[in-house]
Length: 143
Image (cartoon, rainbow, N blue to C red; front, side, top):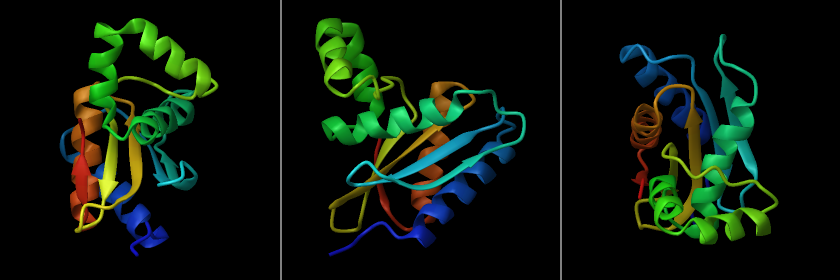
């Protein structure tokens, strides 16, 4: 059984922040959750605005909640707003349905966690998340 290790979570964060720096993104906030939705690691860059932890963790939590990346949640919110309202209600308002929440899978495809990133455009947040996951030698699922 493969679990998300702290070392892997920290690698994801550092590589995501490096991707953000290389692409001249705005200050990023990165939350890595294990498969049970528990915080494994977190970093918030200097200059990131308040509520960034809640947004980043909400993107990751939402991805875990439905077993799809938060890009799927974003599309579903547009197509089925009542479903998203209900989902957010039963989760206690913890889901942020915009891109930037990406599932983390091991090399066999087993779900081991999710990363949520916020701070730049949602597309750039997602790109940084994918870069972090790949740097850790893991597989990603953005949609």
